[in-house]
Length: 173
Image (cartoon, rainbow, N blue to C red; front, side, top):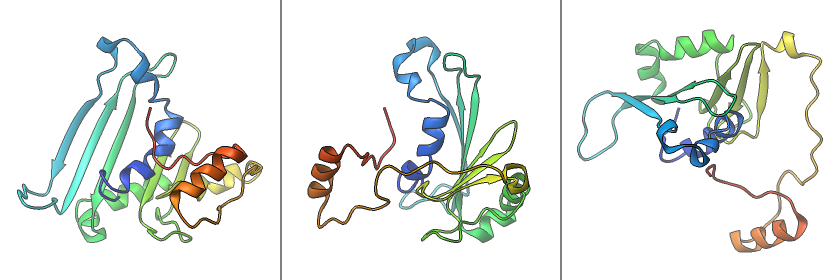
Protein backbone atom coordinates (compact mmCIF):
# COMPACT_ATOMS: atom_id res chain seq x y z
CA UNK A 1 0.00 0.00 0.00
CA UNK A 2 2.75 2.38 -1.03
CA UNK A 3 3.96 3.71 -4.35
CA UNK A 4 4.81 0.81 -6.60
CA UNK A 5 7.95 2.53 -7.89
CA UNK A 6 9.19 3.22 -4.36
CA UNK A 7 8.48 0.73 -1.60
CA UNK A 8 6.69 -1.54 -4.03
CA UNK A 9 9.85 -3.29 -5.12
CA UNK A 10 10.46 -4.24 -1.49
CA UNK A 11 6.88 -5.27 -0.67
CA UNK A 12 6.39 -7.39 -3.75
CA UNK A 13 9.69 -9.27 -3.39
CA UNK A 14 8.17 -12.17 -1.45
CA UNK A 15 5.39 -12.59 -4.05
CA UNK A 16 7.95 -12.37 -6.87
CA UNK A 17 9.87 -15.27 -5.36
CA UNK A 18 6.90 -17.33 -4.14
CA UNK A 19 5.17 -17.15 -7.51
CA UNK A 20 8.42 -17.82 -9.40
CA UNK A 21 7.96 -14.75 -11.58
CA UNK A 22 11.64 -15.02 -12.53
CA UNK A 23 10.59 -17.86 -14.85
CA UNK A 24 8.91 -15.30 -17.12
CA UNK A 25 12.32 -13.96 -18.15
CA UNK A 26 13.46 -17.43 -19.20
CA UNK A 27 10.31 -18.69 -20.91
CA UNK A 28 8.93 -18.52 -24.41
CA UNK A 29 8.40 -14.82 -25.25
CA UNK A 30 4.93 -15.60 -26.60
CA UNK A 31 3.89 -17.03 -23.22
CA UNK A 32 5.36 -14.49 -20.81
CA UNK A 33 3.15 -11.46 -21.26
CA UNK A 34 1.85 -9.92 -18.03
CA UNK A 35 -1.48 -8.15 -18.47
CA UNK A 36 -1.66 -4.89 -16.50
CA UNK A 37 -4.86 -2.97 -15.71
CA UNK A 38 -4.93 0.22 -13.65
CA UNK A 39 -7.45 2.44 -11.95
CA UNK A 40 -6.52 5.81 -10.44
CA UNK A 41 -8.32 8.59 -8.60
CA UNK A 42 -7.83 11.03 -11.43
CA UNK A 43 -5.09 12.06 -13.81
CA UNK A 44 -2.50 14.22 -12.10
CA UNK A 45 -0.08 15.39 -14.81
CA UNK A 46 2.33 16.96 -12.31
CA UNK A 47 2.06 14.50 -9.45
CA UNK A 48 1.03 11.01 -8.32
CA UNK A 49 -2.66 10.07 -8.15
CA UNK A 50 -4.23 10.16 -4.69
CA UNK A 51 -4.90 6.41 -4.91
CA UNK A 52 -4.28 3.64 -7.40
CA UNK A 53 -5.18 0.03 -8.03
CA UNK A 54 -2.98 -2.05 -10.32
CA UNK A 55 -3.89 -5.59 -11.35
CA UNK A 56 -1.21 -7.83 -12.83
CA UNK A 57 -2.46 -10.92 -14.66
CA UNK A 58 0.49 -13.31 -14.64
CA UNK A 59 0.55 -16.26 -17.06
CA UNK A 60 1.35 -19.83 -16.05
CA UNK A 61 5.01 -20.46 -15.24
CA UNK A 62 6.03 -24.08 -15.77
CA UNK A 63 3.76 -26.16 -13.53
CA UNK A 64 2.43 -23.08 -11.68
CA UNK A 65 -1.03 -21.84 -12.72
CA UNK A 66 -1.78 -18.26 -13.77
CA UNK A 67 -1.72 -15.81 -10.85
CA UNK A 68 -3.21 -12.43 -10.00
CA UNK A 69 -1.38 -9.67 -8.17
CA UNK A 70 -3.29 -6.62 -6.96
CA UNK A 71 -1.45 -3.49 -5.87
CA UNK A 72 -3.28 -0.89 -3.78
CA UNK A 73 -1.91 2.54 -2.94
CA UNK A 74 -3.63 5.37 -1.14
CA UNK A 75 -4.34 6.94 2.19
CA UNK A 76 -6.21 4.82 4.72
CA UNK A 77 -9.27 7.05 4.23
CA UNK A 78 -9.16 6.57 0.44
CA UNK A 79 -8.80 2.80 0.79
CA UNK A 80 -11.71 2.69 3.25
CA UNK A 81 -13.93 4.84 0.99
CA UNK A 82 -13.35 2.37 -1.85
CA UNK A 83 -13.97 -0.65 0.38
CA UNK A 84 -10.44 -1.90 -0.27
CA UNK A 85 -9.32 -1.81 3.36
CA UNK A 86 -12.37 -3.80 4.41
CA UNK A 87 -11.64 -6.45 1.74
CA UNK A 88 -8.05 -6.70 2.94
CA UNK A 89 -9.24 -7.12 6.55
CA UNK A 90 -11.69 -9.83 5.48
CA UNK A 91 -9.02 -11.65 3.45
CA UNK A 92 -6.48 -11.53 6.29
CA UNK A 93 -9.05 -12.20 9.01
CA UNK A 94 -7.70 -9.18 10.87
CA UNK A 95 -6.50 -5.64 10.06
CA UNK A 96 -3.46 -6.00 7.77
CA UNK A 97 -1.17 -4.01 10.05
CA UNK A 98 2.41 -4.92 11.00
CA UNK A 99 2.88 -3.54 14.50
CA UNK A 100 6.67 -3.94 14.43
CA UNK A 101 7.19 -1.97 11.23
CA UNK A 102 8.12 1.59 10.28
CA UNK A 103 5.27 1.54 7.75
CA UNK A 104 2.62 -0.51 9.61
CA UNK A 105 -0.04 -0.37 6.86
CA UNK A 106 2.36 -1.32 4.06
CA UNK A 107 3.02 -4.92 3.18
CA UNK A 108 1.77 -7.94 1.31
CA UNK A 109 -0.98 -10.52 1.61
CA UNK A 110 -0.29 -13.71 -0.31
CA UNK A 111 -3.53 -15.64 -0.56
CA UNK A 112 -3.31 -19.38 -1.07
CA UNK A 113 -5.65 -22.34 -0.90
CA UNK A 114 -4.70 -23.13 2.73
CA UNK A 115 -4.27 -19.66 4.20
CA UNK A 116 -2.72 -16.23 3.91
CA UNK A 117 0.83 -15.00 4.39
CA UNK A 118 0.97 -11.43 5.73
CA UNK A 119 4.31 -9.61 5.53
CA UNK A 120 5.37 -6.11 6.42
CA UNK A 121 6.71 -3.69 3.79
CA UNK A 122 10.19 -5.23 3.76
CA UNK A 123 9.14 -8.85 4.27
CA UNK A 124 11.10 -8.97 7.54
CA UNK A 125 7.99 -9.71 9.65
CA UNK A 126 5.74 -12.53 8.49
CA UNK A 127 2.54 -14.09 9.84
CA UNK A 128 0.68 -17.19 8.66
CA UNK A 129 -3.08 -16.63 8.87
CA UNK A 130 -5.40 -17.66 10.31
CA UNK A 131 -2.94 -17.99 13.18
CA UNK A 132 -4.95 -20.82 14.79
CA UNK A 133 -4.48 -22.99 11.70
CA UNK A 134 -0.71 -22.53 11.76
CA UNK A 135 0.04 -22.50 15.49
CA UNK A 136 2.36 -25.52 15.19
CA UNK A 137 4.57 -23.89 12.53
CA UNK A 138 8.13 -23.03 13.50
CA UNK A 139 10.14 -20.34 11.75
CA UNK A 140 13.33 -21.08 9.85
CA UNK A 141 16.69 -21.09 11.57
CA UNK A 142 18.58 -17.91 10.75
CA UNK A 143 22.07 -18.65 9.46
CA UNK A 144 23.03 -15.03 8.88
CA UNK A 145 22.89 -12.12 11.33
CA UNK A 146 19.60 -10.26 11.34
CA UNK A 147 21.32 -6.97 10.62
CA UNK A 148 24.94 -6.31 9.77
CA UNK A 149 26.50 -3.25 11.37
CA UNK A 150 27.83 -1.10 8.53
CA UNK A 151 29.13 2.34 7.89
CA UNK A 152 28.33 2.24 4.18
CA UNK A 153 26.78 0.14 1.44
CA UNK A 154 30.11 -0.89 -0.12
CA UNK A 155 31.54 -2.30 3.09
CA UNK A 156 28.29 -4.17 3.79
CA UNK A 157 28.41 -5.71 0.32
CA UNK A 158 32.05 -6.76 0.78
CA UNK A 159 31.37 -8.37 4.17
CA UNK A 160 28.30 -10.17 2.85
CA UNK A 161 30.23 -11.50 -0.14
CA UNK A 162 32.96 -12.82 2.12
CA UNK A 163 30.51 -14.34 4.61
CA UNK A 164 28.16 -15.83 1.98
CA UNK A 165 25.15 -14.15 3.60
CA UNK A 166 22.60 -12.69 1.18
CA UNK A 167 22.35 -8.92 0.85
CA UNK A 168 19.62 -8.74 -1.77
CA UNK A 169 17.69 -5.53 -1.34
CA UNK A 170 15.73 -5.40 -4.57
CA UNK A 171 13.74 -8.15 -6.26
CA UNK A 172 14.12 -9.01 -9.88
CA UNK A 173 15.63 -11.40 -12.33
